[in-house]
Structure formats: C-alpha cells, structure tokens
Amino acid sequence: MNRGFSFCKLFVLLPLLLWLLIPCAPSDRQVVISGDIQHGGDRMIRLARLDNAEVVRLDSMRMRNGHFEFVLKAATEEQKEILAQPMMYQLSLSGVNMLTTMAQKGEQIHITAEAGNLIQTYRATGGREAVLMSSLDSALTVFVKQVQPLWDFYQQHIDQDSVREEVEKQYQALVDRHTRYLRRFIAEHPADMASYIAFYQSYNRKSFFQEREDFGLLKQLTDTLTVHYPNHPYLLRMQQKMEFLESQQHDTD
Image 1 (tube, rainbow, N blue to C red):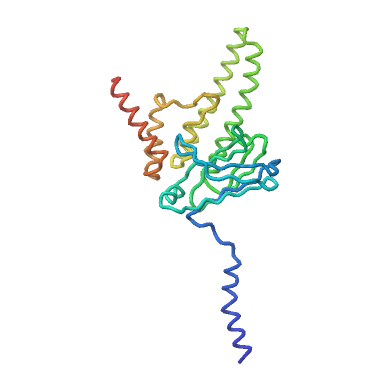
Image 2 (cartoon, one colour; image 1 turned 30 degrees about the horizontal axis):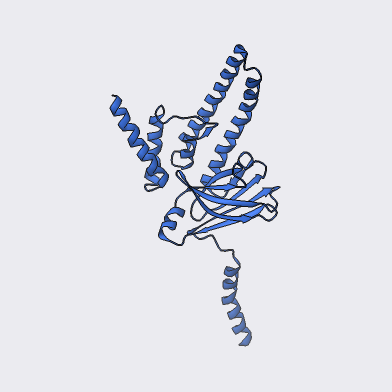
C-alpha cells in the first residue's frame, strides 16, 4: 500500500515539476530587446522609443561583454496600448552610432552587431517587423557602399564636366535600382509596418519617394495598414498628411 501510495504521489507531482521546469513564455504585455554587440565591452547602451517626431528615452544600461537586455512592461493602460502595436525602438551607443528596430507585445527581439557601426552591421531576429527592418537597413547599406566611391571620385574631379556627368548618371542608376527594390518591398509586404519605413527611407537627405509625386503609393499603403492598425500613432499622422496632400491637390485643380 505504501509503495502504491508513493507511486501515485509521484505520478501526480511529476507533471507539475516538469511544468515548473519549462521556461516561462514572455508575457503578452511586455517586450524584450536583447543583443550581443561585438567589441561592445562594458559600454553604455541606451534605449528609446520613436513616437513620430518625438524621441522618448526609456532606459539605459552598461553592457556585460557586449551583452544587454531591456525588458519593457506595461504598467498603465496607455503603455499597454503602446506595447500592443509595432513601434520603432532606437538602440544607441552614442549620438551618431545607433540603429532602429521594431517590436510589439510578446516579442523577444535579439540584435547582433559590431560596436563600430551599429546600423551597417546589425541583424535582428525574434519578430517579423524587426527582421524586415533589418533587411531594409541591409539593402540601404549596400546602396551606401556603392555610392560612397562615386562621391569620392566626384569630389576629386569636380572641375571636369564630362566626369561629373558620368558620375551623376551612375549615381542616378543606383538610386533608381534601390527605389525599385523599395517599391517591390512595399508590394510584397503591404500589411507590415516596415513598409511605412520603406516609403520614408532616405540617405544623406535624399528621399527615394516623394509624398506628392508618389501620392498613389502612399495612399494605398496608408489604407492597407490602417485596416490592420486603425489607431496606430504613426498611421494617424500619415492620415493627416494624406488629408493635407489631398486638399492641396484639390486647390490646384
């Protein structure tokens, strides 16, 4: 009887013990952004959220051997609404060395990068939007690396008209190629917030799309995203821009 009783207790307790040993899944009310920065050492890394034109500082910490982890929890209803939507988060080692990713509730985003240049070396995993953002930045890095030698050559031969014309022609070809890439990206990911970033991607004050000239694409993107995220702060601002642009078009007709 004692052996049977012990066996029964073990049979009941074993599943409970196994359940306790299983790592807890992240709460759907929190976001985890972690990373490993090569040559990051024990430097300070800062986390901020981008709320349209406002940069909201959230936290900072000293890395351990290049490793860091930020956990964002919702303590208020407003914070719950923010975490529930894909928002842009900025990680920075300095005022000019930073990257931007995207995350929402329940996601564990992991970043790997080189400390010397975060934006051009990082990769992201753990969230669909974060991965798409990483792809966009990688494509822009390729564009920049192709453009930079042209710019250097242009500066060296700025007095030669024929050279300038050829460099400008090659530069425009690279711009056109990257713009086609962004257009395909938006077409393939019409319901992803990363497409919002794709439309407004720029380099050295060069925007690949213009709100007025590419109004049709902007409107289509806005309408599609608004269906999925009706109260998203980024889209609410985009809708305001759309209304303004439409009113201007009516005025010129």
